[in-house]
Image 1 (tube, rainbow, N blue to C red):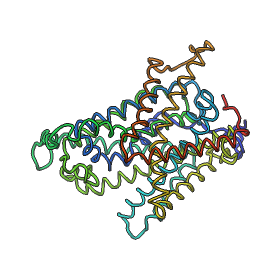
Image 2: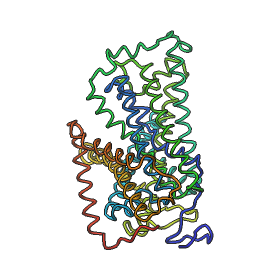
Image 3: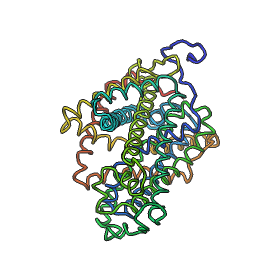
Image 4: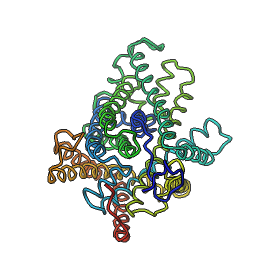
Length: 465
């Protein structure tokens, strides 16, 4: 292979550059996980599950996420490649599963990026209404694409600050909420745990509601696995990946759980499900000037962070799949900075197409696309756990387990529990009739991808070791 970094030319098939630092990896996954759903949808979670139920739901969802990360870490440290779990699925399960995994994940992020562009466009339009939503979406698309094209280090630095703003906002919110609850700030005196009693019960809608909430909460944790894709461009993945993943799971769970506790203490149960932005409401009661404007800017940053991660992940995934013959060879092209630009632009164009379906086919095409994303990420998590089981068994047969620099603890308990937990999420979608469209759209997507795999199988090549 030609080393693009050494020759300075634009190769057809070069190597990605290792320019990602550990702090970039940490913030990349935190930014991919903490999205607009937390800032906007957290109140609805409390309304559905109750104060304690919401906390339990986020603890359970965070634990499932952490188990998946432990499975991914073992493979990523042993073989840090930008194809990550798509490459591992090809190697340790089958090329067909690898093909399906890669395109599932690409589609998941491409559609999610469309939703994030829409959210960013609406917020920016509310701030500057003279510019239309679609124009904001186009401007943000060009901005994020431009940042990604500069270099992987530029992308990592941008995401570090995007995610940093979200983290700071959450920390300030949690500290302010607890101080508000005990009466240190604000003009309402100590409200204590009165909001917890306002629900009438810690589980006002019953245990089933808590269980169904866990399903939706697990979706909100998806994005943490981006750290696996970034491992292929990490400066020292063998040393960095274990440390990042161990700290990542704890940080994400703490951010979510503490945020839900803070909301449960400060937002009355009757208002939790109807507030457009519960964070802004709490900040306003605390006495923070321009609370709504500040939170809108935080949510805007969160949406841009999601788009930043989407274009990064999708471009690297398409680059890796092109190397296996599972995607067109044009996606293997790199610019002078070692960035796979063709996959980046293809993802951006696809996201903009999804924006059109939101405008002109919201009740049909867009509904099915968005519903499919609710299932695709969970299926990818199942495949990560399945790959790790087969990976460890392969090393054991070869007598090479001692080569592992990081081991998933309690093997095979963790991958098995991870696999079963995510399978339960998929199966339980049938319990909630409103989620049937998720199953139908996801199943349709799988059938299409399996048919595509059968048609293109002759062009596949073994995943690179």
